[in-house]
Length: 68
Image (tube, rainbow, N blue to C red; front, top):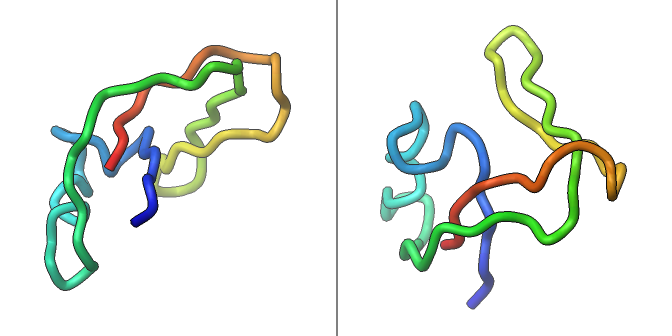
């Protein structure tokens, strides 16, 4: 089993959270809220305002998310 850290639209209460628990997408179980140890730039862009992290460790903020 793998752990997945989600930090954007897949988090609880966000527009795509239902996808994390949809059995058609596989099996996922919410384990905990978490945040990154390192700081990363979190960018919210694109036409759909999807968030993504830039791989620039030490710049930006510790990102809050969830572990499944």
